[in-house]
Image 1 (spheres, one colour):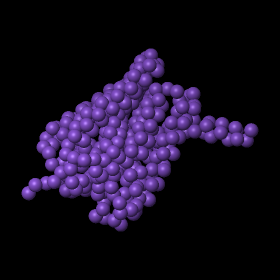
Image 2 (image 1 turned 45 degrees about the vertical axis):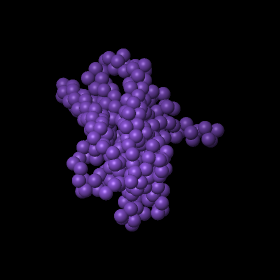
Image 3 (image 1 turned 90 degrees about the vertical axis):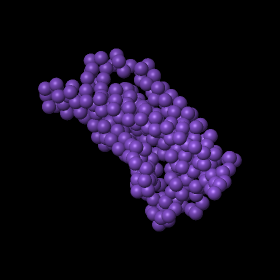
Image 4 (image 1 turned 120 degrees about the vertical axis):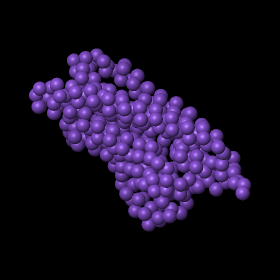
Length: 314
């Protein structure tokens, strides 16, 4: 039996949870609420980090980059997801799919590297506090941010180009929530061994290696904290790392479960819900983690609110 394939740039169909229409209606409202919270929460983080001079330090510079990533990440896939969940039409154009793929790969890889950079910042702050301002000066922070974004861009160009060169079958039904590499590989009629190897290498380089580096940095931080004799000093040192550890746990806990899990039907169905979690829930929780657990951010929010109130009254 010959599988008909079409090399033209025709539309794709995102199946999502089409076999569970009742679930899609519920998910539409849940995702819409989370998306609004994501936009507002991350915009607040960017605003206070930019406006408040007390937050003009490396930690909040990198946090602002993380908020920009979360905004781009959710905006690249959630609006299309909402459209598909609301109505019977579940199509996405070839161009829309390509853009979604490019952005998703770029932002995902950038966040992996940025989380390592943020762990490095915490390592220097705890293990080398006297040299912190010398080591983590503005130029170095900008260079590290460029490294993170540049890595994401290069990874996206390589992975997306290799994926979009594949011939896709005429019934372009993607069994997923948005255009991603595994779903696109699945509907290709060509030999996808190269693409699968490329995806596996990317998973190791961008997921496993960064996670090992983060764990190593926190191992060194734990040793440094144990050498601090006062309980108050230990609490203060750990307090600067707790938020980042929570964000790392949320991100890597879900992403590794999706991309490093065994390939079977049960794992694929569970993977859809995990994908929803790291594309919708995690970007919403990140600003909450950094605001609710951080006195500096809460203080900056209060100062910004007071300043806005006073300016309006004047």
